[in-house]
Length: 325
Image (spheres, rainbow, N blue to C red):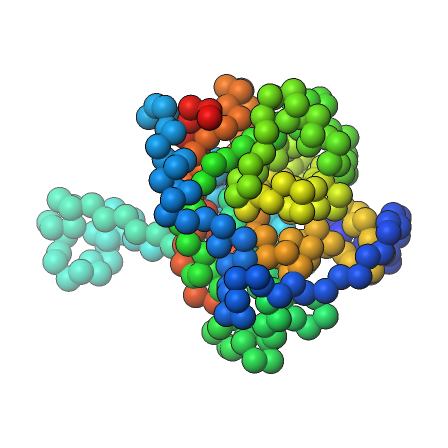
């Protein structure tokens, strides 16, 4: 997606496709008035043990991307890019003598230190339920007036996201349909066709990862960001309402495709999942190795950084192949 494209869509409202305008309202959790994690409540000690007992080898697949200066990120709305700098270097330590131990010691013991600055929604990361809301509320009816302080949200912050261990399923849409056109909106039929080709049946509580093929271009920010394909509303409704999945993920920048499907909502998939249904999702995943090895079922294991009050957090997910039931 070009740097200014989404801003033009938002400000001018051009080329927005009208769809059936169903009423959108924040969901109230079936897990109680204090629930902050939505469908992650589907995960239990028993479900974690069940999937771990199916692991068939020690081979692992890293589903995260690297962070580097110049990496693609969602900067069109003014969010900061990834920055890295050195705070200590071996020779600089000799010159500056910050530890006060002198040149001889600092020549013997080299010292490198560094720091980063970044937006929480870049690289492989999970969106917390406070990331997007509807009509002044977020998931479970929490409001900024009551629950948002100067140091972050008091409810549904990224620190509430527990380590995730569940059955993972790759839906390899690009392998099924071929290279996806610019701005292509993945449909429920696409997902069903991909699953049929793979011989996979979804189960309640699954972590479903959708491959668009966009991660192939991750090292080239201009290509990666340029009018990328994403998932559509009918597809996520099918996954959530008909298949009862627990968590979603994809290999593109913002999960859904642009321009938006609704004239009255510029991120309808985000608000449907996060605000209406309490379903978190992971963006900017690396799914190429799973695809190449045709690994469609696996133990999905991941944990995010416990950033108190934050709307998202970096995540390092892995996949370990399992024996199918």
